[in-house]
Amino acid sequence: MGRLEAVPVSTLQASRIDDVPAVRIGAGCMRRDLSSDGSVRVWVVDMEPGSIWPYVDDHDTGEYYYVIEGEVIEGSKRYGAGTYVRFLPGTSHRPRTDTGVRLFGFNLDPAAMSAAREATSRTHRFNYSQG
Image 1 (cartoon, helix red, strand yellow):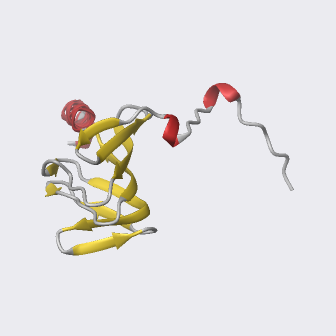
Image 2 (cartoon, helix red, strand yellow):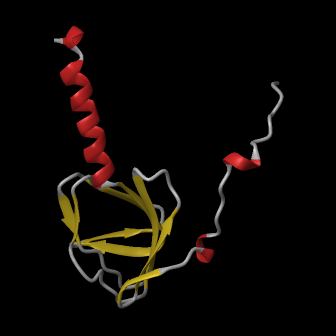
């Protein structure tokens, strides 16, 4: 069996979710933005029983979340704890809950995606060996 190496403390970040400051999005809806590399938005959303997201949430790059506890309602579908939900790019939704819910999710930052597409396009445009 190989020797386990310790992870250098300087390369590790850890946060207790409930210690991360929450931003009030609307009545009964709070979001905690977690640290990331900037190209991905990582967050935890808490919604109180009977709450609805205050606006339709549009996703140019898609959105992904995992139901940690409670139940979220998307349209006429209910998703309980342990469910992974994925919205494809170009979709929108307006979650609500009867019981309360905690979600862990992420989505790609549209600005970072535009910059990456532009860089890829620029690289391909000037790489004559690929045609």
